Amino acid sequence: MNATSFSSHCGTSCRVRIATLLGFVGVFASVGVPSAAAARSHVSVFFLRGEQLASVQRPGGTPLEAMRQLVAGPTAAEVAQGFRTYVPASTRVLSVRVANGVATVDLNESFASGGDGGSLLARLSQVVRTLTGLQGAKKVQLLMNGGVVAARFPGVSLSRPITFRFLQTPNVGVPEPPSLRLPPPDPAVKDVQQQLIGLGYLLPGDDDGQFGPGTQNAILAFQKWERLGRTGLLDPQTKSRLAAATQPMPISKGGSGKRAEVLLDRQVALLIKDNVVVRTVAVSSGKPSTPTPPGDYHVYAKIPRWWSTPFREWLPWALPFVGGIAFHELADVPAYPASHGCVRQLFTVARWTYNFATVGMPVKVIARS
Image 1 (cartoon, rainbow, N blue to C red):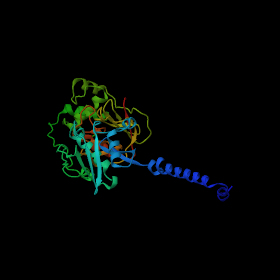
Image 2: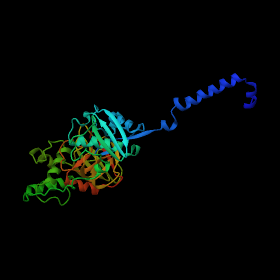
Image 3: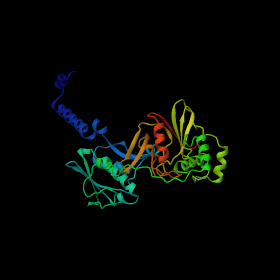
């Protein structure tokens, strides 16, 4: 039966009931059931992965929803992959509005409580990056309990709106290696250096007989590999072990070509070519609160001068291999895990590692070696 014949057989009351029913269907379609576009709406929220910001997708589409998702923090699965947040869990979003390209976000006092200067800069960067671009926002004005934030964030004034580009712009010069005054050459030191060259902790030509940072760092790498006390000094136990030591071997199996292994328990990195350890270097990986995630990765870029946007510091000779986690140079490389997830190296070895590596080089991070 077609529509015309059905209409002719249906009385007035029947047609009214049908029209009413169709009206209800239209209401449910437009109000009760989300549209496909709304169901697909997502917003980018920025956490940290090592020394850089990294985005994750969350349901929502408004600046207020984005901020609430940011405060909620990364999921357990994301934490296992190295994502971290510096926004305190006690932070409350009081309001968010966007007008004339400025996103004004009002947070409670918890947002600026606790943490050091780096932590404060990191959480500020998370907020600014997350809000930038939403509803045309180009700048972010941060308020606390409705008022302008006092000067608490190192090198950043929040008395007026700031851009993410401002946080991306270096405000300090590139660090230079320290000028050194080395002791005069010593034949005993030269003998130790030659042993370290033979074992792959120093390079041919490094046996100048002068005990400087390079030799000390090589001794520290040797002590870490051999599981000795991490002093960096040629104590009797270290000297005795040197006499009988063999060159480190790769922990994992691999094919030909270059690769690297980062041994978290030993705090060393093995630089390997054709399954032979070319050099063993002392490193400092992620501290317990921001650990370097074990796994198989690849160097995806070589950046001689990398700038950490959240922490506003230079990371020379950077070899990022997952997110913002990279090999890089830093002045402070203690004998224990201390970084935000990266693999720190002293200036005596960082540039050599940079020159050794290639884009695409496999990097395997191993928890227990």
